[in-house]
Image (cartoon, rainbow, N blue to C red; front, top):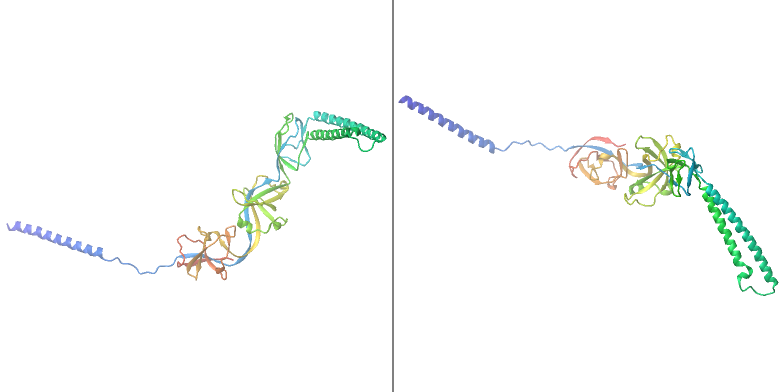
Length: 390
């Protein structure tokens, strides 16, 4: 009996102890949860920013654009008269060069020779008629004077004046017909209208052509032209038109494909805006392009570069200094950020050139090389890694 009571007492005591432990742990956990979290009272450090020292400089504006080399003249040569092709010049092949006046195609001309002979006969006939009419007119005038009548005849027919006018008109008409026949005969011999490159030949010996038939495609070989569309900003950086086309403003052209380069000149400027791009074009020319070393071929896509006017009070900065919002960020008073909107005046290589705001022109400024979108005006920064802009 006593042993059974002792067992129950031990079990009860263990339960009480377990309950006490659980209650103690519960209150201890609540105390830990409600206790404020510890924190460190450290001062925030301003972020480091890489800057470049921008100084006022002067520089020649650099203008560049792109365009394809095009011939000065491009012509689809057509026949002016009908006939069979009886001969072609040896140089009349694609890729060959021909000089102005060179015979390219010979058409069968017997019909045109006959037409010239007939026209010459007709002219001789009407000239004879004119001489006879002039003689008869002189005779009629003599007879009128011998009649003793005063004044002028009542009719022009008396002195044969209408007959003379008809004879004179017949001569003029016959002369025009002869000129037309001779012109048709000349056009059976088709010649190059200018110094040209034969791009495509469209006829063969034995072909029969009609007036208007296309015979060949020709490109002039005297020069190629490149139309370079420029923005209003680029035009503002160039000198006046008279200076540009005076022969001294030379241009560098570089093939986009293989890097070969040529020197050109400004030939003219267009006086209208393109309806699509809203830009005006500068026309650059290279004389005797096929005689250059290497030859400048029509169709070559080119980068065109030329110097503009010398501009004052500029900053030269890396292109990364201009933010996506078109802003330049700089360090004010050595530790805080500020910004201003800017548009580059021109660019060259990896650099941009922009006009210096009047408020910042007196001294050099520390400009951020890589501004971030999270920056705010007045934000404290630590300029570091400074790059000096010479």
